[in-house]
Length: 390
Image (cartoon, rainbow, N blue to C red; front, side, top):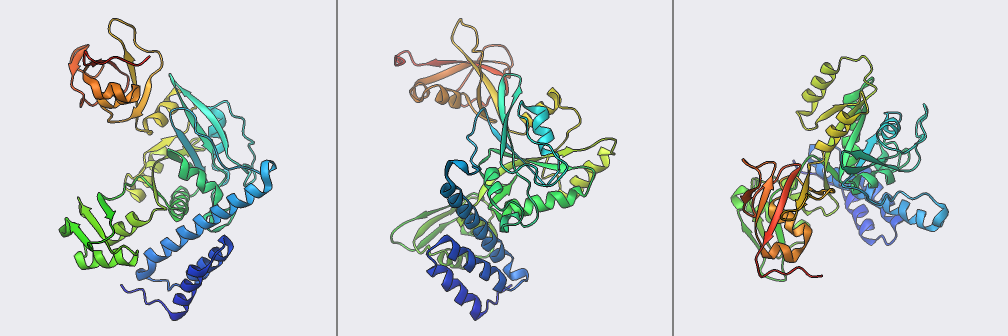
């Protein structure tokens, strides 16, 4: 469907292009959102404009915080532990309680909205690894556009490894999830999705050359038109799976990030959780795994850890005990990945490994491509000519 943009819209676009300060760009973008027609053909355009506005507001808030200096609140949280999980939710959804139950942090807990005014980190100990949980100040409908505490809290979620959507089970849970998804997407954060398998390699000359054009839904001419709209006139494009025009647009948007996410269902009490789970499954089609927060014990910690898609690997030397502290790697990591984590030179000289745990028998010899599982013990063997640096 054509966008049918008005002459006033194009004048506002020119004002945005001429804007020099963040404030001027924010005003111009707000005007573009107001002037853009609201119909099916402008959905992608409006999403892009709202993402732009959210990013500009974050930049403005960060700039203002720097002016305040050390006395001003900071929304930057240095990552610690094996992974950082952002607890994102509406006011009074139970974020502070979850953080208090699972870590040694002592956040302010109140019955009034926006009790938490700045991010609060805490370390969750699960067996032999630590996971950093960060309570994000409340997100409401319109946060990405400056409402509530503004877009700055969304920057914490953007930088986290994983996002936990903290949802109050005692009230409109589907509406809560939808608002959080919309606000995060408006800030350029895509949940439980991945970028399409395509690459755009820019070059100086040669026009636009496409490999796999048949997998673009819309035809090669439309693909080139979209690239040219993004001022890409010379590039080599590789498409490895079916791709829509919207997915191509998103892949060209450098402000987008992709984050894994799950739902933490709080204030469960005596509610019929089976019905709550069915409702979420029906509305979101299994997009998110849901964890009910009933007891803050090892079971809850394990459920959170399993949603991080990480594995723990224990290295050992021949005829020695395994290391007490594990290497924490992404799920699907191989023996070669373990060697690379130990030392890049070791990885180059790696010949094979012996593995205890996931193999058919203890200490089985496996190749460097062997995919490991959580709690495997790995004994690495390099070529005889390899001599580790001292």
